[in-house]
Amino acid sequence: MRKKILRTLALWLIPPIGAFLIRFIYLTSKKRFHLPSFIPSEPVIFAFWHGDLLLQPYLYYRFRKVPKANVLISDHFDGQIIARIMRYFRLGTIHGSTTRGGAKVLIQGMKSLSEGYDIGITPDGPKGPRHEMSDGAVVMAQKRGAKVIVFQCVPSSYWQLGSWDRFTIPKPFGTLDFYASEPIDLSGMEFEAAKSLVREKLMERAF
Image (cartoon, rainbow, N blue to C red; front, side, top):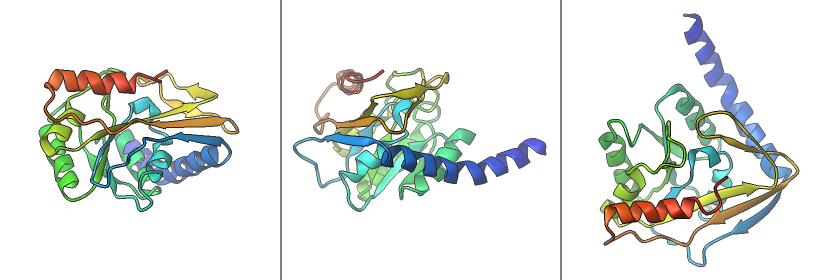
């Protein structure tokens, strides 16, 4: 009973505080955006490592002035908190894992793409191993013919948690370099080659 009460309080208190802190970090930092030469008008899959999740909504806004995206989020308790924070940034969520019983969440993701939604995904989520690619992003891209764009945020100074994903929190009043790759077309590629290509792009500025 006590655990249930504490979780209820956490779901009520943490999301608005988290959203405020994200905005505070962003607003107090200098920003530099490194964007692709071409931004597709059709739905795309945005991929970023789980530990680099925090400020990605702001990079997404550079692509879509009117956000229309669903982010694949773990159905664990921490995923519920992240989902509620995403609502403050006008982003929808799809709950589930692309590794354990992943068919359902992948079907939902592909349905969202067909309905005109972009998809955000952390290929090493929800529980790692860190920087190891699951199949989900490539499956959805090849089944729906969607291009993949890799997102990265590189802060000049940051805290890094001791969690499995080494979750990164940029320090305020620094510089944030946001990087987005050129759209990656995986159609016609062998599956493992496509996974390797996306991981290679994700690792270019990983830390």
